[in-house]
Each structure stands twice: as C-alpha cells, then as structure tokens.
Length: 568
Image 1 (cartoon, helix red, strand yellow):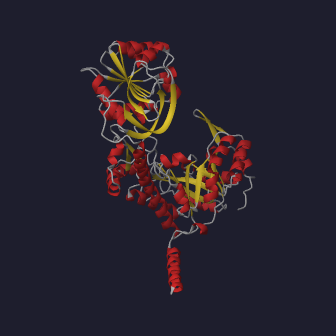
Image 2 (image 1 turned 120 degrees about the vertical axis):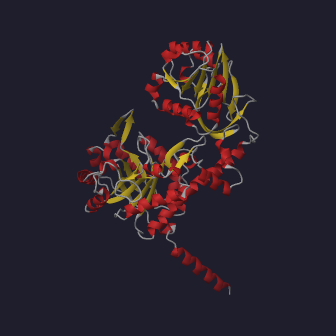
Image 3 (image 1 turned 60 degrees about the vertical axis):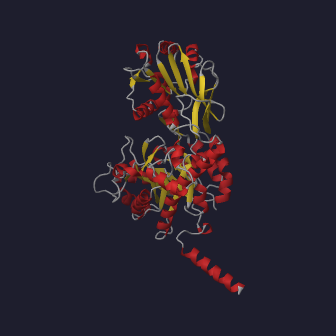
C-alpha cells in the first residue's frame, strides 16, 4: 500500500511538473553569448541596419541586443503604444533587421528599457495615457516610470514584448526592470495593496516626522561650535542644525535632502521657511556658478522644483547679488559646495544683517573659510556618508516634527525589508509571467535580464531579486554589467560574483568599450578591452557582452573577432 501511494504521488508530481510551462532549472541549457548591445537610434533605416550587420560581423558577434523599446515607444508599429517618431512611416525596422541578421547567422535579441518610459524632455506617451501607472515618492513627487506593482502595467510590457516575438526575434532582453531608487512606490494602489497584506500602514514609511529611517547620503559637518543640533543620525552624525548669527539664522539639512527619499526633509524645509520668512519678503535660491561648473545644474533645478511643490516660487540669484537681498528674506543654498572667500563674506553679512539661510547638504569643501564657520556655527571637520540610518530628534523644537513611534532601529529595518519584498514581488511577477507566456509557444527563445554589478544596490535600491529569477527559472541568462574603467576594477567586480556564479550559473558579464572624461567618450585601446573580456571568460561567464556597437572602434572590432569562447 505504501509503495502504491508513493507511486501515485510521484505520478502526480511528475504530471504537474511536466505540464508547467516553466522548465526545471536543470533542463535549461546554458546560453553562450558573443553579444553586443546596439542602440535603437542606430537601426532606424535599411542602410543603417545594413551597416550594423556589417560591423557586428566584423566583430565576430553572434548576437545583437537591439533597443526596440525605450522612452515608452517601440521601434516597430505597435497596437499598445506609439512607434518611435524617428522611424519613417510604414517601415518596420525590427522585421527588416531580423531578416537581415538571420541571413548572416546573427541572432537578434529585442532589448527593452522596461521601467523608464519618458523621453529626455520628461514626456511619456505611456503615462499620459495611463497616469496612474507612474511612480510616486513619499512626499508626492511623481516620476514617469512604470509601477510594476500594477497588473495592467505588467501586462502592457508583456503584450509589447510579444509583438517583438511575433517578428521572429531570438531573445527578449529586460533592462531597467527595477525601481530607480528605494523611495518610490507610494501611489494609492500600492498603498492599499500593501496594507491589505501587512499589519502596519505603508503611509508610516513616508516618514514625515521623526524617527525617520532611510538611505541618507551627504557631506556631513560633524562638530558644532555654536550651532544647536536639532536631530541626529544613528551613526552619531548631526542631521539638522540651527545657528543664530547676528540678526539672522542658518538652518542646515546635513544630508542631500533634495533627493526627497523621505518626507521629513520637506517638512523641515517648509517649517524653516515659514518660520524665517517675514511678511512681504521673498524666498531666493542661490545659483552658484562655480558649483554648477564642477557638479552640474541638476541639483539646482531639482531643489527649485522641490520648493515649488512646497508652495514657493523661489527667485534665482547669484552670489554677487546676495548683498542686495533684504533682511527677513530666505536664501536656500542647494548643494553649494564651492564658495570663495569674498562670496563667503557676502553670505556672512547677509545673515548677520537679518537674512535667513538654509543649506541643503553642507558646504564642506569650503569650510576652511572663517566666515562660513561663523555663520554655520560648525567646525570644518567633515565626512561623506551613504548609509541606511535612523534619524531621531535631540529634543523638542518647532522646526522638527516628532511622533510617538519607537526609536528601535530593528523595527524600521524589518518594516523596510517587508516594503522591499513587496516591490520585488511585482518585478518577479512581471518576469515570471512573461517567461511562462513566451515559453509556451517559443521554447527556444532566450529570456535575459541585465542588472548592475553592485549586488547591494540591486537588492536594496532597485528591488531586483535576481537570485530568485535564476533559482526559480524565470530567466535563461542574467547579465551583470561590469562597466569599469580599468581591468583591475573589472577583476574586483568578478570576484564579488564568484560564489554566485558557482551557485547559479547562467550568467554572462558585460563590459564597456569606452571610458568617460566629462562629456567625452574615449574608446579603450583594443588590448585593454581584450584583457577585460579575458577576465570575464576566466570567471566562468557564459561568453561575454560588450556595450555598445555604436561606440566600438574598427580596431576594437577586429581584435574582439578573434576571441575564442570557452567550451562548457
């Protein structure tokens, strides 16, 4: 009787496994790639496609991963979204590309930038049609990036991918299948779904008051001289400081609060402005030309947008104009790191005469200036940090809202873990459902996903549970990007992955064909690129990938063509 029951049980299990569209991990062949990424903008015409095929052949590449979905539009005509405006009406570049590539024994893998559905101007045809599909931050900031928690958004991606499959591609390649950073996901749908599944309200993780938990990054000033520390981080660093100087005051948010990863920064900034600003006076934002020249203008525009969301249309001023500002005005300094001695003297006089200043992140590189030390009330000792921390209040103060929540950091870590797992599940479901769907009809089609080579970032910031994808056979190939400037750095990346390569297999590492010097892209000398590919192959990678064909020199193509793959 026991033997009969065991036999029946075995038959049932075997039948269930056999009927599943997802194969067992042991049944999935390890795919060897000699591949290269190709930008969608490079295959818009027949002539351009012919050139791409010729260059791929010159490099000995057997697979081209071609951008077919980016900024929310497709390379080919689609019934689910708009076709790329740069494609000539009536032309299907993907269909032509597949035919041309196959005639030269080159596979075509359709490369999808899944999450990022906006163009460089911030416009998204997908989010315009489906505004509830976008991401929402803890303080209400929105982003045209697909919310993987929503079933409709996942189905949209799957449907668009199946259109590419119908054109005869050999693989589907997931990219940007992640959250852009850890603060996103506070839309009404996700909040309701999360709350149904957990024993606390997700809105608590917005952290509009203290204690607040999150990944905080900044250039911290460490020791006050005259400033009062209103809040501190769990690593002991001051978080919020207030210094009274002359007739004015200086408020310092001692981290990069403009990233808006929690609501607490906006709440303190709002309270500070409301407390400082006198009737009839204005809010100004400092445009530091020296800082912009070194670090770019993005931080200025992002903080200006933040102020606008809080209700203030800040007037832009430069440092030479500070002396013209009235007492009782508020000057916001967004990531202003580089300040000259004459400029520091102007700021000191502005605050001393009754001006109010608010620093977003600290002016740490310039703290050797005595005028900055006086008006901030801080010593020049400083340190950069980027950690998951708990921010707590030092005591009661009108600028710092405080709750009755526990200050046990382990509670916050556990809740954050549940929040990460919730968002991971949406990405897992997207990949698993598509894999099951496509394999039911096209068992030989290769499904791959590319991720950063930083495993901690992938897990905690991007919500990418890549180990489950491999272990549960949701994908055929994982492609970590070892994009480094030097072979030694590539070797370090590969070393960090060695245990996982042994445990999971089915990984192909990508390298980059150029280095960057400011806005300039410099092709690596062929010997360096060859060395990096050799390191990848010696690390038991299933072949190699190169980013990208557009930027590869003819010398690089010639050199790469002769690299033998290791037999597995």
